[in-house]
Length: 288
Image (tube, rainbow, N blue to C red; front, top):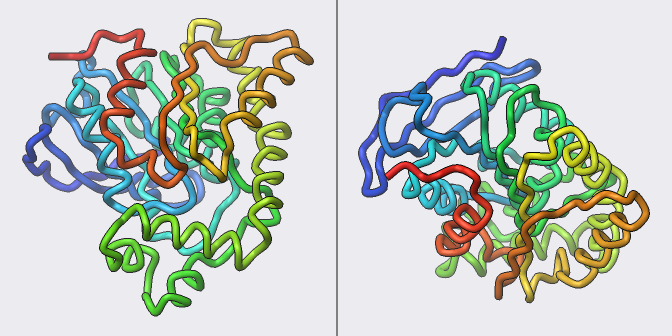
């Protein structure tokens, strides 16, 4: 049984927040929680688990969590901002399962950004809890060839000690994210190869897991949000790949399709997009 350990709640404009950790199956998992009020056990407050991509800072985690709290959710974010290497999708999915187990609610909503979309799909397929919504924002990921890539080396190439320092050291956080991501990809292999790997991961792991969700959890509302200027997970190949997989398997993979006019690195900073996703696909009435 996983256990949850939280610091005292702090007031902020959208409710309250706290941080802490979960003692999971294999390791200690850092979490940050945003909520309308300071009672995480309240059964009347819907819970949403947020899973991020491979490069994330406190700001990019905060925006969607606050948007969810403003709509009455308790948003639980897995905090990977201090990790220096890329870990496997299955490893991060186990972290998500451990966090759900520690929170102990009967049902959840799951939101996955970028590689977190693949992780979120794994969690939804594997958890015994009820999943009301599975929201995938520019879902993608990297194959095992990239697992273990040292993110700290990317930051130090720009004379920063950590990825967080790189993100906060630039005047524009979106530009910093783009620099960090571009550097990571370019120092490892060409962007076109990385895009091919992202599609490969979707086919080999994310889509089979999503098919499992559709077959075993037909009441779960699945949302796909994708950017029109996203070069890492391009909109047309993503949609084409999904449609082809649907045709091959004879199962519909996506219920709600939400396009947005943005890039891959900008998705986490758009509170309006997060609110739109949560409202348009929600089967839960937000708590006022």
